[in-house]
Image (cartoon, rainbow, N blue to C red; front, top):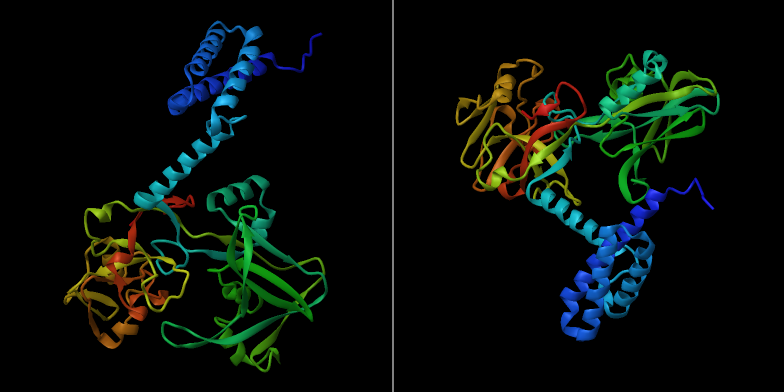
Length: 428
């Protein structure tokens, strides 16, 4: 009887694949267990292997299964741990080799890196978020799909389940870089599952209110929602400090007068979006880990380093990217928003020159704060480096936490491979 739904070619293909695997197992048994087997067993294995090879060569499928079973039985009896009933052993071996190869490439040659913050803008962009406007909502499914592919964006939409007005909690905070007192939306640090639950990642959990009902928003650990919430609900104010100073918002306290909760007077109807925004990940790039084994990093290059030897950072260590501006024995000064190295204007590469002359998108130049405040000079000690962010106004860098040990440098970025913007290509 013929069964048209059975693909004869596929069945024969699997038989050939299984037979080749058995021949390979026989070769291994003979190679690694020859000294443990008597001559009669070795002769039987060689004979069955030769017969199976002949059936494969002549495509004698009538005898192929019988000979495969005979050789398989013989190998199971005398092959020890070398022989597996399936291809699992071979697959595990191939997977193990692939993992070792990937680890070797990542350790010694190159690895991917995602920009966490915007301290290097506009050279590199970190993670950001933006409100979804009505045009984006009305766009065709193909435009939305292309936008998602191009920027690897992810949309967050919090829908109201009750009517009311939106309230935002605020707390006092002090900036590390200049000790300025500001107000921010508080969050709780939580862990979320990633990659089908195989790993966990740190995240922020924000809580806002519609009347007395809580709504929670989860974002990546490096992404602040302050700007989005301010733009959505208090767009006439530049900061939460202004919101507090304004005095027109109803306010109540929670948690022993620590948290101020402000009623923004923004009305929300049930079923409507409270806040809808998309998350745009930071630039993804490859880091060259080979070059610095043969030469020292040059002033003007952007470098990737680990924070494990920097006192101000706690475990686990992070990977940062900044621009190297001084090597051992160099003396740095910032005057009139310009960076001087050993008393000379820093023009070692294109970006340093743009910052010093405020060209292109680098209109702010360098800010004399932290260790370089008020025109102070700093000389870099031996075996250390001094790094600055290209976004000098909003960069937490060597001006605040000091020098980077040379041993902490991991490599230099050389290609931005995602997202597909005008920054794609060779790193600056």
